[in-house]
Image (cartoon, rainbow, N blue to C red; front, top):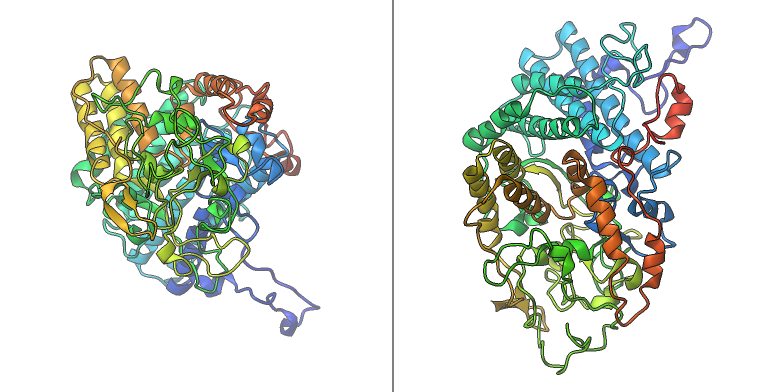
Length: 613
């Protein structure tokens, strides 16, 4: 509830609200409801005054670190609980999971406040019918998104609507996650219903940046269908989805009738200067230096910068790209296509164990000539997809406009997190203090939005369906659209003063379209690989592996190869020790455990733990 009433005796003089609160009646108007709605939008980033990076809207811990995309990074003694996720050691007592649960249900609660008070205002006649339709629709779509987040993370969650805690009481749901027989209640149909109803009440064009419109709600619904179908198909959830035909119709509608197009540069989907571009369908808004002490910025990713005082952010070296992800960007020198079946059997060169002040090369571990790479140009690189250097910071390549990535000097502990740095959410040096926080312990909250759904998602989801329907030509055409855009802009070399040179930073940039998909199995692998390349480090990978039904197979293979990597010029044994006995347990680890604190609060007969925990 939004307010509390304190009574003393029976004299109305003593009836007052706690300081800083207002009654629901005072909020039941356009201004009040809009304020509440903004409050619901504000927790999309996972920060609500209590939670920070452990509940980040980017899901970098739950979607990247828990996959083969990224290591926790930093060192083994920093934010120790985060490191359990890389070992698939998901614990019901995890404070991280508890805070993620809290922020999800905080968002749901805020949406329910909007819906309840909008209904009150409508009954009182203090808002127009058009405002009523839009407020209900926006809050319903947001509520669906929050429930979806909970569903793909925790699995068997409870659905909560605006009647909880009111005299109307529960209607079609229980306040827990089980029915009277103790069976889990599947909430996919309720999420779907919220979105279908929302689409009817939303405008076709957003009134303000960041607001959900019809297209955003359709994009969320398409995402719901893809995950719902995949999880049911692979035995993770029990209900019957409406089928891929429903997803296909929505995806085709967005592609054919939506106002979206691929932006010219892949990188424009990750830089602050191009927030809310023509490719964006639904993104979480961020702002800084607005009096909020950084909490309106992308505070959930505040740890995910190179380590050291000479680069951006100044803290903390988390979320480091894995060698496995880097290897996925390797391409065949002749065809320009990825190595779909054996990409992780050949390691892209790295500088493990080589101090930044020493010269090095791929073969010997040291540059033969100190001037071999005079500026930010890699003249010895393998054939690679150019998206690699927009996703990953690696030694000798310009790190946006900051400097050449120096290697070990920007890595907190190489043997632990590897030699690479995250890059996608980083601000440019010219934006420092303007689009990043100008003060604070980390100076890493930025105005970089989190792009949750963009046209590239829609095209590649549609390619997945085309493969399922054996329409391999369509699947290839859609994948090639994404690959064609990836070739448009590459990272350019820079001189020692930071000036961009008229030459690519790497001579090995090589990406070409597919010429044919010979069979369905090949097409499926190609589409899934493209999804990984396009959205690497975006917090999606774990959930994609789960919906494809291959999480256990892929992640256990990933760990085994990590255990056999060459030690190189330093001791990598500590990393091997960290991964010793790591195992992703099928039919358990596809869902994170429901926080034990929540079960203790509600009772285990109301909120039942996921299987295996």
